[in-house]
Length: 290
Length: 343
Image 1 (tube, each protein chain N blue to C red):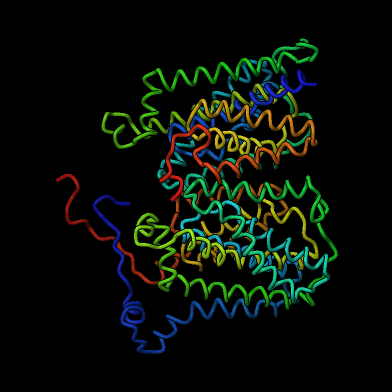
Image 2 (image 1 turned 30 degrees about the vertical axis):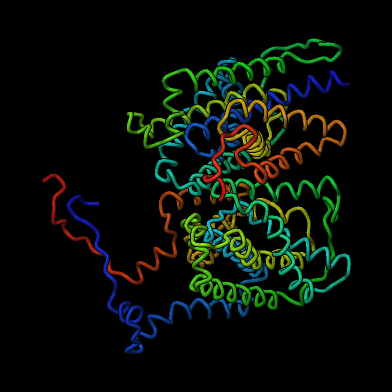
């Protein structure tokens, strides 16, 4: 029982972290709360499905293509939708939310709601770890999730582009004065965030069927995890997702699966009410509250 | 636009006379001021008389339009205090559930539940939001987005207040005509009261909090307290809308906290124009009938109004109302620019 809890808690936590990675990165680098995150996530899933089943591409190729397409779409969203309203937080949220809802409801209208829609797992089979059987796809998720988190931390802290992006998020005017272009940084951060949503979709979705409502859940999960950990810190994201992940698994085991959603929604409300910068966010009292 | 020309806007003489100088010199001046307002009010008042021609379907559309308009007005007032809500369904659900609970448990009729649920629901919502009123900008938006969803999940898992089945077979209103006039009366009162409110010194504090809250703190106002009062005033029509719909459907359940009641009012205000109240009403009178016309296309209509939201946020951020107002009050003409840009 305990081993089961530990292992599936770990899987769930990494799933949450992967889901939220793109959202958190975009917010941390350009301050845009990308409410289209859930829409982009499902778009990547359906695109991969279309590439694989309608065009007959090999599974891995189809998935990579889907991630790239969604990444490019992210950049386009910044260029054509966010640039005209840049700096007006309300308009940014409304327009990205509108994009997300439009994507999700478009697929619902097109009839992508049956049980036929699922992605193939990349590696078959399963293994037993201390009495708990776990399939390779879940192990793959853990590996990819941890690798991506490390890679992103390295990217934002030790590469020129990453540092430039972080500079932009910390102080836009100073960054402009040393020659970092604001719109370029914004486009890149949106493209990266959307691409990461795509990666999350193609590795997580093979675990079940693709359903439209998942798109809304993904957005809420991303909000919960990033808010809990602090909106711009990578460590916070990891800790936040483990916190929510284990809390969800524990409550669903002991109280019933329907409590899972209460946990992450409650986490959003509680953390925002008590400490809006999250457990690891740097204090920005004046920006978030007076 | 043609380079070398710029658009010049000049107030019509009649506007200057009737608005700034306030001399109504002729019948024409009087009509210019009164007609647009009177026309709208009269059209609304005689609407229920066309019951036979339009059928009960469009009467119900009219009802939901006005209910969304009430929610939109409430959103607009909140935005005027700098609180951008992504969860109007919180107020709607609070009012709805309170009315439903009172009538389900104690058998109260709408005559008692409506006022109690309006005031009580507004109080409850204010108390719920009180701990988070300190939040600003996007943080407030995110939390209001999550609260209604959380409440509906809690109702689902704890099975309180009827759980997933909700509470049904509640008392209803005598007839549709009465319902229409009731909501209409509340709508008129709300628009009038809100327009008056923002003009007073008290209302100015609200707008000041939106524009620069730190300056208001520095001026010695307790903005927490002001924000709480603002939320209460804004919650009143929205809670009424919820309580009203409970008795209209004779049912209250988890759909009261649905995302629809958050997105539709928000979209209405964005389409109509933020900060004018008339814009909020106008927006919902455009949006809700349109979405009814698209009902046969299923969820495509949600795509359509998401795209409308997008187009209006980016393309016409001032909203329809201000756009129309400008056309009504001003000439526009192209004049050649005196200085060329490359000299």
